[in-house]
Length: 261
Image (cartoon, rainbow, N blue to C red; front, side):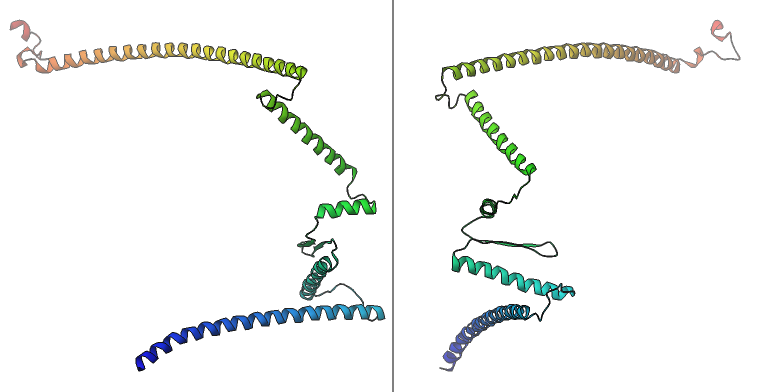
């Protein structure tokens, strides 16, 4: 019985540890949520207080000199503005576009899910009548549209040259297509003949160079062969002289020895 109780205790202890860990995580999450709610409440209270003070003329809005305090204030106010933008989008079915640039250059933005930035800018342009783009940008847009149309036409012509989508062409268009294909075929044949002549010209040059190399090689082999024959003859003479009997060798002190023998 004691063994069973101890084993059950060992099984229960890990479960307790898991439950306690889960409880700690829930408590931590609740604490974080409470802290966020407190920060939001503090921000709202600060905003309301600033508005009241501004109405009474008691506070002056000016640049915060301390960089750390300025960054903290920016982060809080930025989060508050983004939150308000989301709230007005949901509560009032409004279309909101918000862009914020920090002093460091980092951007934060918010666009209502029901619209896009381009739509917002176009509506602003039409409603306010203000020119958002200068003449240079408008000309650039016109040039882009022209190039798009030109590219589309070229794609259609390319499909026609491949034989695709020609059922919609009339007789005149088919004749023009046939003429374009014949001209293209003629150009291809002319280029083919030009390449063929160039290949033949290169072949002749290679053959001539090959003959010259063979001639030089034969001359070199002939010279080396003659040199080998000459060297072999000299070696034979030296070998013959080394093998002659002593008696037949001419001595400097007895010049008439061979005659007497």
